[in-house]
Image 1 (cartoon, one colour):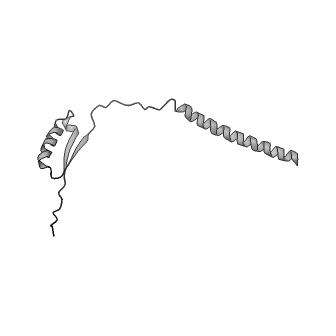
Image 2 (tube, rainbow, N blue to C red):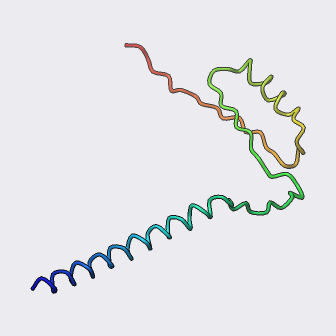
Image 3 (tube, rainbow, N blue to C red):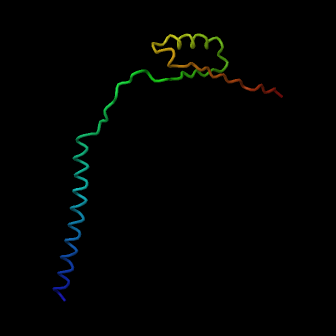
Amino acid sequence: MNGLLTDILLVLQIVVLVYLSITSVYIFIFALASVFPYRPQSKPESEPKRIAVLIPSYREDEIILGVVTDALKQDYPSDRFKIIVIFFIAPVIPHL
């Protein structure tokens, strides 16, 4: 009986040792891989991307013209961007 219990404990120790060894090696591989981070090769842009400049406005008629004029003075190709002015007109609520 004593020999059987010792054999079971020995097998259990081996199973736990193998499990812990595998998990330790797994973590070590990822730790080692983190030393060499993946950096994808960036390809040079042949032309600038298209963008949209959104200008929100609400009761700012005097300011909008200056903001749009300044937005048009960008050093970006004019065929690659659009300026969109967003107007918000609040409904008139009569005072009771």
